[in-house]
Amino acid sequence: MAFPFSSKNGSEETDAQNSDDSIIDSGSLKFTHEAGENSSLPTYQEASGAPVEVKSPLGYSVGPITIISLNLSKMIGTGVFSTPSSVMKGAGSVGLAFIYWTIGYLMAFSNLTVYLEFASYFPSRSGSEVVYFEQSFPRPKYFFPTVFAMQTVVLSFSSSNAVGWTMKTVLAQYLYKLADSTGTDWEYKGVAMASYTIAVLCLAFNTKWSLRFANAISIVKFVTLVFIGITGLVVLGGNTRVQDPTVNFKNAFSGSSKASPYGATNALVKVMFSYAGYENAFNVVNEVKNPVKTLRWSAPVSLTITAALYILANVAYFSAATTDEILNSKNTAASVFFEKVFGSGGASRALNFLICLSAFGNLLAVLIGQSRMIRECGRQGVLPWTNFWTSTRPFGTPLGPYFVKWALTIIMIIAPPFGDAFNFVVDLALYPTSFFTFILGIGLLVTRHRRRKLGFPRASYRAWDVVVWFSIISNLYMLIMPWYPPDTGADGGDVSFWYATYCAAGLGIIALCGVYYYVWVKVLPKIGKYELRQTIIDLDGGGSTHKLIRVPRGELSRWDAEHDATGRLRHRTTYESKSEGTYITTQS
Image (cartoon, rainbow, N blue to C red; front, side, top):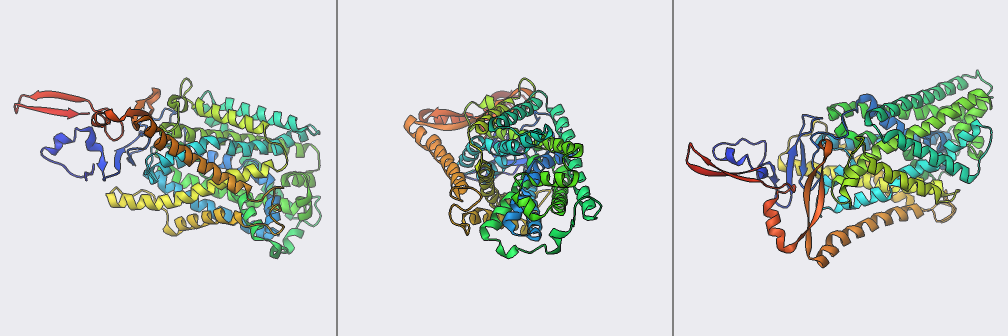
């Protein structure tokens, strides 16, 4: 086994000119090492993974403020305005609801540390989970990249559609409130489609300015929640029109005993939906200068700020209205809060507009992060039409992923009916997330062991073992407990049909992706008498990507002899050394 950081001398100095000399051979696995311009730390990765883009074609416009903005904007969408009533219903009491919001923060923070350690291993790779699964489980070859890529593309509507449904139930609702009117279902759909289209257009033409625009909206969102939190404290002080603002806190845990295991799990699902986004900045790691140093403080800060704002917002809601008013209202908890404190005048309308802006900012943050994730799936070579997914022409932005997300989200906004669809889509979006986050925690332990065995340099960030295990166990809980039936029967969940439909649907989609892999990688090559091999394509703007091609079995030996483990062509040059009178063959 050859290590690139070991000392060499004599004839080995000549061998160092070989392209294969940069390959670390561990038998069935082969590893490369390369550093991008964004970091002095090299990325050691298995050769079947997408190549490191030494120069990011998307630029280096992501700094600490943008990292905080991307995470905060994705977390603070509409969940904190719409889900507190669902959390309260599942918890059974105000006090237990606050405990669930705190547990959700701890779960999200433990998951965040897993992402941070992975980022320290791969500081020049964007795409977060796409990369981390690819490198944690490189065998069977292309299995995890294929399954995760198909799931990411097929369910790319999930985050967006969850937001899309929120757009219909929250953003559209607030827009119509501004006009003192109510809309029809199709009018809400039209608002959602128009809003999403505008969001895509805001990002499609320039990366730097789109990030600046997203940052500006995130500041407005932050100020909005700070205002709600401060207003809630003022209400608690008894200086507003609200009568008895402390009524919900006098017997805060009254009703906790009535909470069922299903209700508790459902409450945690809704809480984790609100925290979803703590990992968003890891999708743009290769656009960050000194990413590990920057992320290790800015990512936890964004999550902690968001958690504090969520707690303050819940204090505000429960100080302004009784639990019955929040649970029985057809409006969101934030709507009830505004009406109880400000009435239906100008102040309430202004805050409604700020919540609309918050929902729009969430769309931007999701699009920015998910577009990089989908692009990285394309760079693995496991999706057809490689250039469509990976090209950044002509504006230096990932237009292909933007278009796919727009098209799928528009379809999913139009197709499903109202009613249970929102809850189902939110749950469907989160269940596969819990599955993959659970596997990701296991993958971190596997990656640690492999790197230690190969003698790779120690990571610049290492999560505490107890925190990693808490992440694994908590996500395992989120996988198992949703199958526990509600006390009211199989149709007694938060949807009118079978309570675990979203669990079965989420696992079914993952299974179908596995079937696609087996057919594509095993069955079709056997029928067509070929094998898949990867090659590297250099893109405009410094980008690069893998592309999987079909090599007839009769030509495999020649192909493997002409290409190294990464798929790069070996160029041979023979020349005469006058000093020693020998012929030397080098490969580059």
